[in-house]
Amino acid sequence: MSALPIEVTGLGKRFGDVTAVDEVSFAVHRGRITGFLGPNGAGKSTTLRILLGLVRADRGRALLGGRPFRELAAPSRTVGAVLDLASAHPATTARDHLRTYAALGGLPATRVQQVLEQVDAHEFADRRSGTYSTGMHRRLALATALLGDPEVLVLDEPTNGLDPAGIAWLRSFLGSFTDRGGTVLLSSHVLSEMQQAIDDVVLIDRGRIAWSGPLAELLGEEGSLESAFLSITGTGAPA
Ligand SMILES: Nc1ncnc2c1ncn2[C@@H]1O[C@H](COP(=O)(O)OP(=O)(O)O)[C@@H](O)[C@H]1O
Ligand SMILES: [Mg+2]
Image (cartoon, rainbow, N blue to C red; front, side, top):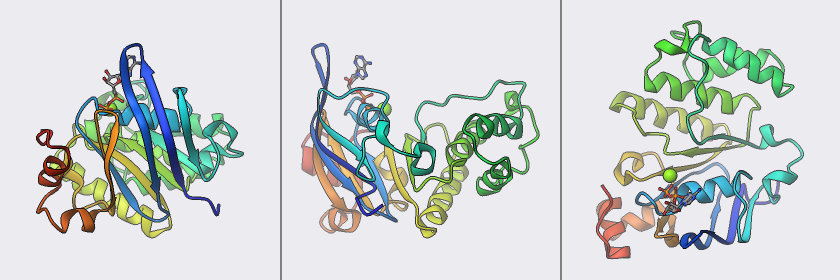
């Protein structure tokens, strides 16, 4: 792909009277971790759902490697996504869940062991998922998204419900994913949590992009993402 991994231009979406996304434009660069940050209700999930072809935009374009999701030749090789936590059946093990998804996706069964290793799942891979912690469920969802060996990962609020050890694990996982050339777009309403993990920032507030660019540039004048968000939007930092 020579096009940008993700490029969103002039995106707009209304739900009845609510303008969820308003003239949203941003780009995500290859090999980098971009944090899509803003308070609850800012329009993050709607933007990501449009990008993944789950919601139709009223206006604008959202492209993956230069194409809309629906026109990708090999979607699972291009993008892996964890949006809502679609969990496995409680009686199913992670390994069986992944075998099913690999088969459905026409992917080689050898991918199952590879993604289990990628998310450090050996300790729970053969346990029924009904016994999993939130962190384990999230790692299984991530493993499922990785089955197609995607170039880009899109994660909606991946730190929700994680304890500090889970967040630390996620940071190191994303670091190794991008070290291998992968690109990540993740959303969060908790600005501080991923401050050490992200390279670039896209701030969204009430459906509009408030700021985007390298994290270092944003933090140049402000000590933290919270204070940067406050001074840019003048609305007060989200919790
Ligand atoms: N399917 C929907 N129907 C009606 N309103 C929606 C729907 N999805 C999102 N919204 C509204 O759009 C706005 C943005 O929501 P969302 O994209 O979920 O924000 P975020 O993910 O940043 O919390 C909110 O006001 C939300 O209530
Ligand atoms: Mg959301």
